[in-house]
Image (cartoon, rainbow, N blue to C red; front, side):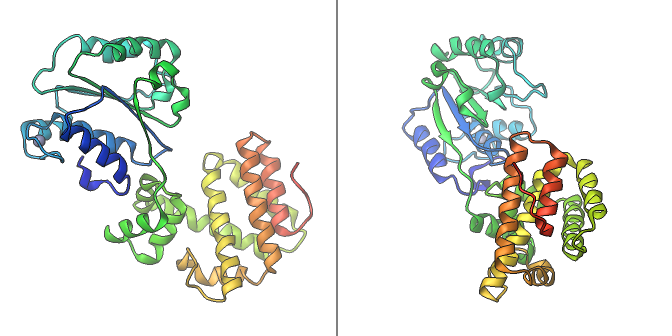
Length: 334
Ligand SMILES: [Zn+2]
């Protein structure tokens, strides 16, 4: 349900929206910038719903015809542009925006357009929309959702109000998950793992697949830890396995990272209070038998591998070096 009450954190943005409604100073164009799954759509849709709500208030009333039709995707004055395509071209803008802006709202005060992944708009598409933003009809409101506001033309940026959505604090996400009924031992892990993204936290918290996936990766770490120093074949087996899971490599390495981080913390504090993955405490304690320096080095190796992959280094070589490094062989990534 789209309403401000569902949104955690981001108070500054919500207050600013409320203020603009209170003072009747609504801008014609907004940009919500933030990483993937940080709540951009929820925030934008809640604001759109409030703008279209028939009862004046600072929250969508949820009971008027507009609010009800909004929730069933039938509000005639709301346009959500979310194309599957890699780029949003000028034809998409003409078809989905410009054509609809020529006529007045069907029923409500505004026509609200949300454009998702607006960073994918081509320069031509941006120029096409620019004309509308420069001289918008009084009823038109645009909300651009983007992962990178730098991809906008300066002329568009200068006409929009820009809000940057920041990652949420781990404690905020952890509490939110616990309130949703997630076991507190695991809520902390989900929160750390999601790195401030509420959408990511919810996605993994309710995903059966993720639980199995994580167990599998933790078993790999165990396997690696128990390996005889020079069992290269086993290392290659894991490399080949990850090659087939390439799309999830970031998730895989995050699990490695949290596991060595937990082990280091346990080693240094000798208690489990600050461990994130409380559900695999015994495993963490076992890995903590490594010297502190080794645990610190492993964390460095993982971070370095992540960086190399981001810079498009050879996948197999990077992972192979990482696993050999974790095993203790001195092979440095270039
Ligand atoms: Zn309403």
